[in-house]
Length: 395
Image 1 (cartoon, rainbow, N blue to C red):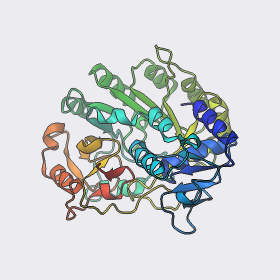
Image 2 (cartoon, one colour; image 1 turned 60 degrees about the vertical axis):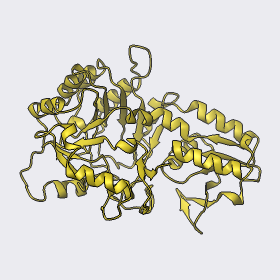
Image 3 (tube, one colour; image 1 turned 90 degrees about the horizontal axis):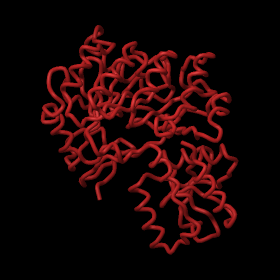
Image 4 (cartoon, rainbow, N blue to C red; image 1 turned 120 degrees about the vertical axis):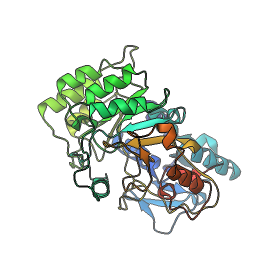
């Protein structure tokens, strides 16, 4: 969405302070930094509760908050909801001046609707294995190596017949998210699957780069009652290998300017892996900020530029920022394999097969029991969540 209110709030903060810092050097903080830079607002760096000497992020220094918080500086908190509350409490304890502090992370949380994901169980649909978009910061090689490790002829493309079974095998209030681990439109039946899910009464979301989509597909999806639509666009570094043509740019422009029947923008969120193409930036001007969100996918990618975390070694109970303690946001692969979540590119937690068993039956099986034991503090469980940026100690 367009972050005009955020920019306005930061500009007001800038008028009464000498320098600006972002509190938090992780995913949210970096996303806000990209937005500020694009709007010609300069920050001095990132601050955290305790910084390592010489640490940097996006070329800016990371320093300990206490060294500057009592100076005439503006602080933009760039964290997720729960971590924001913890930091606000810390700043209160330190007698920081709250007239010089704004919550920047809330704009991204509201825009991306992360809290909505905890209301219902969710099934992410990976319509095809082997994504030609092959983004630089996506562990496609890890996924493909594991998926085809024992069977080179394993089903690559999800069929409509199998998709019908997935609809039947999920709870009535299970949300369907067409995203998963590849571009949905690389499957030629994607539009039909979207229609089927909507007709079944599911809350349906779509995350797409439009690779493989046609003008007809776009015309059809504009008629559907989506809960959320995210658009991933081509970038000037070609990190996302999206086919850029006149037709592609026309489709992007059409979606950016489309509205829902109630007048709200059709697109909820636009993202890229680097600065978007200039043509797309021009289309978005005054309408959308393009978020650049780079993370290590629970340790499945490496790179200093990626937001990640140290292994969360604790005997305390941990939970997920997105799906909460239920951990009920699962991914189905073309052959019915059900994975724990969209971070599990290494297929570490295979819960079962949705062609064979129902969603609820699978969640009662042994692997899900192991996962729940792991988040409850059992250190003997090799748990993906401990490497994930979105895991946290439950308060």
